Amino acid sequence: QVQLVESGGGLVQPGGSLRLSCAASGSISTINAMGWYRQAPGKQRELVAELVSGGSTNYADSVKGRFTISRANAKNTVHLQMDSLEPEDTAVYYCHARTIVANIYFGQGTQVTVSS
Image 1 (tube, rainbow, N blue to C red):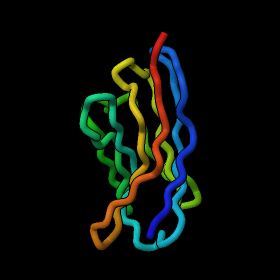
Image 2: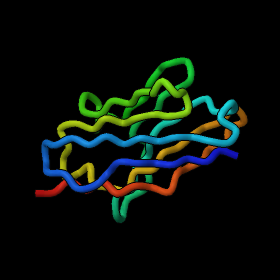
Image 3: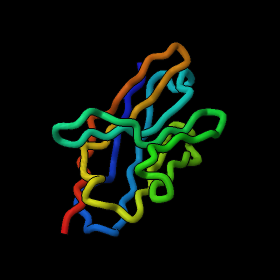
């Protein structure tokens, strides 16, 4: 089992920045990827960014060049730096972790609202 605790999020104006953080605990030795999904009202949950244990990253096309995922010195923690935020980025953001046995775990979610 893997437990995920998110922090960050909130209300920001268009063009602003926010940083999300996620700390994993439990069976962290089984994790081979961590990142973030998001779900806007009335839409399906979508992958935003993912960092694989080998160091490669994946981003949704809609956030490339604006969002950056990174790992903290504590390898069980990842950050998502979100710059040039747009109203379309408004959603609940869920940290996720994938394990070597293809399980996926989600955090409780944190609200990001981009509005003037």
